[in-house]
Image (cartoon, rainbow over all chains, first blue to last red; front, side):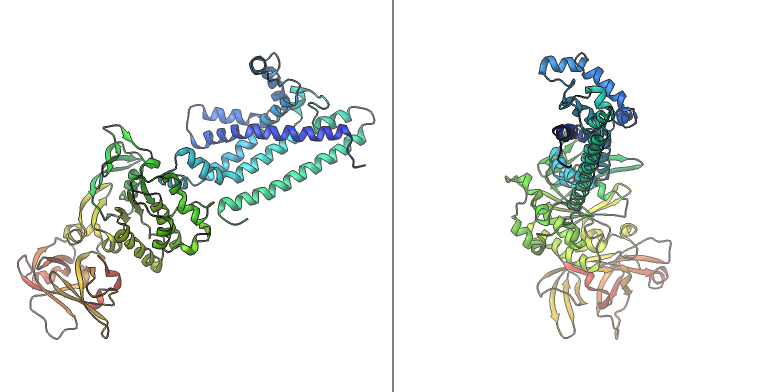
Length: 233
Length: 364
């Protein structure tokens, strides 16, 4: 019973791949945004803050639809990327990763920003007086100190990606083997007569996956926190 | 060595200060909020003056007229913060070597090896530990070592003893004295403790409300009656440079020779021939117009009244000159009238030996 069918394992592997790439791609963007929002003052800061947080409150289908408009084959950004770089998001797993990244971004930014706010700025100026340029200060002081926040954010965003449904199905549709992640596969099974049992199997799989992710994150966060605080993990 | 002139505003606080500091230890002295730490921040480049000029030797760190403003990481100014600010995610060894990483090639400051600094500050046994597990005194020693290893041309110490208890204070003072005498790096030392200033400093810069009230050599500054209000009523007094002439182990007394004669003091922790600096609080000095006989006070120093301070209260400070050395005595206005104390009058200054405790004596 617990041997996965090829379709099931395809959905599982695709889900993990999409989640991994969505987190990997959004991480640098999120750290940069968090840094801007935490450390800098500039006109339009609250607007930027609101835009970053929009995916948290908008219906996912709205995000998916806007992605389709912008990054679809005939969308302005999509057409540009397709023509000059040969990158296409439409109806491919990269599009699913993009949708997940946008949906997970607010969680990632929030977690990183909170730990940035908590960093003792005095440590950064101490490092500067020891000869560290701003870039070095960030790499050798700030980054290690916000690591717990980064790990937390990555886990939240990874989990969000595993559960992402609305934006993905709107943007890149539900194509088995290409864009059909776990939630989409579950949805597909519930739409066909007699698919209940298979849907349930995938549901249990999703639960196990989420549990594992949360427990792994707990261990990672504990280690990173101990490290940043100077205790031995 | 250090030239400082700056105009700086932050909120309602304005700093308008200028001073220069030679080699050795320069103490920035004043009450909390006088602007002492602000001055250090401006020297280190952690804050920017509206205008002014800051130079260490021939290197200009900041000059508003010439448009020079070196960023903090290129100023080569070691800064030891009141709260240590060790990097919590690094070991003691990594903290010590943090600055060395950015000064791998010699760059003209004081260059010491890790081994030298470890020996100087006695932190060998701490190297593998994390800052979180260190005591306050250990943290400050590591912080001093870390600043030294970054090869600074100037060391800023911001009340490094403020958060420590008395035994730790004595411990760190000892290490700072070694720094001054063995490493010979110019030090700017911020403090509001006259005890520390007298023990460590060569030059004192007195700050009040963001302004330099006065600056000069420590012995001169301490004897100035009109500065008493800044130095503190309780602790104000004269500072004498002396040499240990005798150590009598049986009585536990040392005879200290200074310009104006001899002083007996108990428990002086120095060898015969060593130079020491003695602080004698004004309130511990009494005055007599005749030489007293049969008295328990061991120290009877003859001199003449040089100055009688002004006071609205019951007591006044009187400065007595004894062959080039100045003593301050705090006496009542009634005594001034009764004894007709006025400039030129010969007097005897009386000091109880036990009033000179071990905190009053430091290595010069």
